[in-house]
Image (cartoon, rainbow, N blue to C red; front, side, top):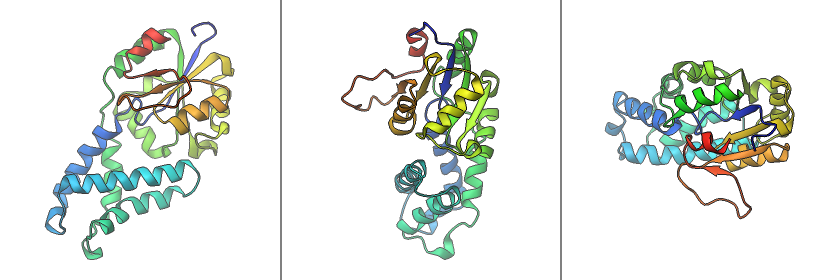
Length: 232
């Protein structure tokens, strides 16, 4: 695998930036500050369970080009509050804005991220390919200390294509000045990151920290970032 390899493409959320940890911390803060438990028959765990289900579904639709950025942002908390039976009069009007601002400033990364990237940077140049929104992704990269490791930040909204569309991978190849056989994509999402990269002719490594069952076809996968140093 190391033959012609000279550049690495990384997904950001759920691969390097620990979305669950950062999101959970932010939701917990806001749940307490907005005193949501006083206005509905649910607790923090119930709130998070419903929110995560709705947010995951909406992001899946976004990644499949079935809804836009503003609809995703507007609906994820509104739908959560409605599902939980919270009357509209008690909906915190700026909850979504506060969540976006605070969450994107949280610094938690997956274990070993800095150490692994420091070592990989000695061997390869690297880029981020993400379907996240520009203002959020730039803040995450800065707050978590990831920015110095990467030469390019390829964001779907800026290039006009979202993973798994081959257009975003081609944009990354063009920006990094590399060919398909010279790069590897590392990401957690089987549809957006792995299938997308493979359809663009790029070798992919599935980051699968929860050891979820994968496809029947053989697939390169890792359960922690440190394994990358042995694999590539």
